[in-house]
Image (cartoon, rainbow, N blue to C red; front, side, top):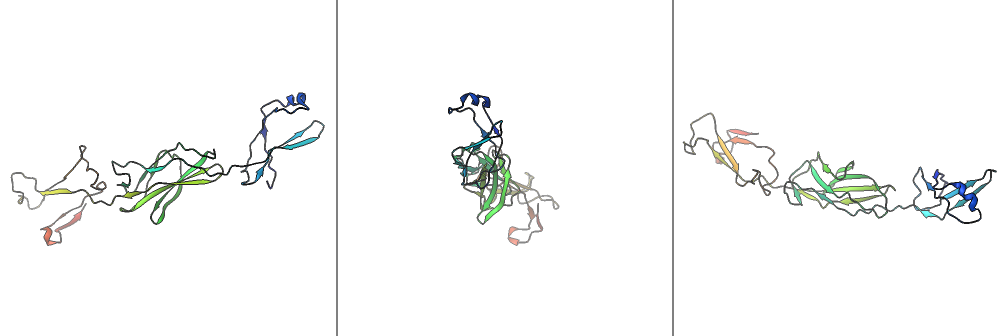
Length: 250
């Protein structure tokens, strides 16, 4: 390269054996060099050995040149959105969290182990959440998001190897479900002895409500939209009269 780089070496044989093998070609040791800086990209690199005798003479020999492998990691796995309470794969109910699954059994054609994983969140307009390092790629959940119903969001993972090169993997995207709440019924009164259109109290109004379809565990089946965030109740003289007697309150 442009500058010599000398590093400590470790031998696997006793150099004293070389004295008995003088004049012949033998492999007496293997050297492993540990460089303290990144090897130059695209340049020939030589492993050189300098031997010093007891009388002060030196001899330098260099091996055949090689080039450091600067191949970007080739990821053979997929980034998918995790299961969300039985939701179809292309949609989810949550606006603040984005669950993901990622196969960490990666293979890299350059044999270079990854140094870090970074994750970003995208929408149709571009980057919604910039890259951030993730500690455990086997359990991914991006939170504190402000996603909008009806929009598609995808996630991007950037894998960086020891050479400093990166490969980006993108998920197919998921739709934040824009469906309204499931249909439910509302019935006035709680006194079965009286007509449904009459009640005995002038200061209270009892209301019964319920979903028309539920699963065995009491939850609304998929197709009814995202989970209920809150309820609002208002009292009106008649739906046809417009303005309520008491406005909507949670």
